[in-house]
Image (cartoon, rainbow, N blue to C red; front, side, top):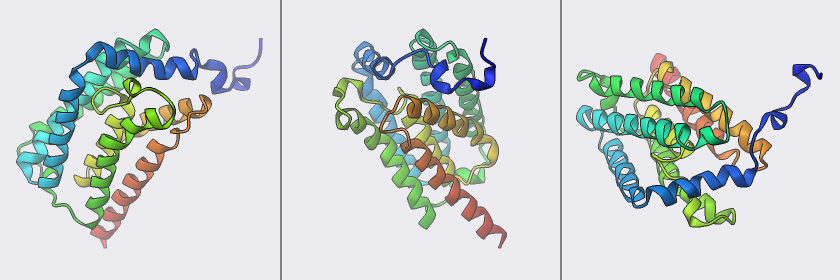
Length: 222
């Protein structure tokens, strides 16, 4: 038997590229027309982020929490689990992030949620727009049908991307970044092994958000 360190991630993948992206198509077909509600929630969340203020921030955190919870159950538990035995761990991770966001939304005196959008905050809004509009376009641009589009609140990557935008705008601490960054690493490594053209989209957005967040932290200390 080969030693465990001789294995590559490709040796551990239990599915093909076609099978992976087929999951999104099957999910969209099963949930239609729920996608319209998901798009509406995403737009409402973006409006809250642009508006700023404590009340809008709490609403945005609540909507994000619901999106993470829905992805945990409907995507990972109901669909991804059929092709990946590690899906239950992803369910727990996304559920944990949902709990943290619910906790954030419940804090009536949370100054971070009321942060105004500054020059770096505009980068957060750009990331949010990419999460909402850019990710659905990846399917047709990659030669896949529109029915396989990845949408915020239904698929993990656009949900995590929009979360990066919100965490940047809120100047959130490390605790709320951990699970999104872990999923970014997992998703990127999976897509790289599947030779998917979109593999680097999420890590680029994560680096932009984290870099801007660290810059704001350095500026505030200065």
